[in-house]
Image (cartoon, rainbow, N blue to C red; front, top):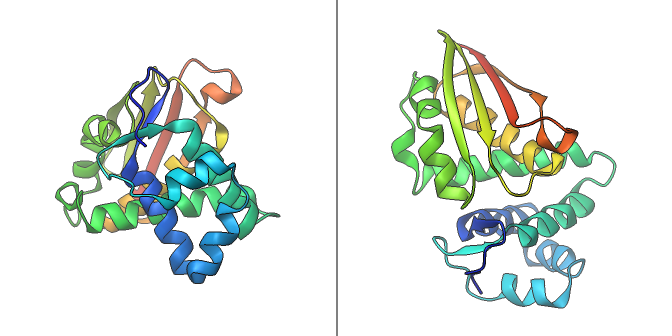
Length: 193
């Protein structure tokens, strides 16, 4: 059930893309394998009807991501989180958020980072700064809950989003992270045209 409380929240569309990733990578069996790693209350929500535009506890998403990483890539967990982000971008930018893709123009997508952030998170904000013809800096400030795992999904999301916009050899570096004690999260994006 969506959350109405003051806790950190995330859109149901994020949960849906994670569950779809599991189905694509192993069908119902893989989905059940991951769900069994979660508390009963989480399973009840994830096995029910998830509203794409509804708000859900961010902690639920973090537990789901951790369970997915543990099942799909226990020895390369960081890679699993990046792949979850990539899958989320792929699904959402080919679907309801396709308006942010303009072929040959990754800056168009990145310039909408503040609006895109609001499609996923209830608290905090993200800024965009163009630093060159093929580079930009994104900064996330004020997010209530920050984990390195969530930041890895954000890296993967932006890698794939820039690729879908026509960027090649995409790099997204993350030199500053609130989970590592910095005041905000910073993502340095660069690509070839």
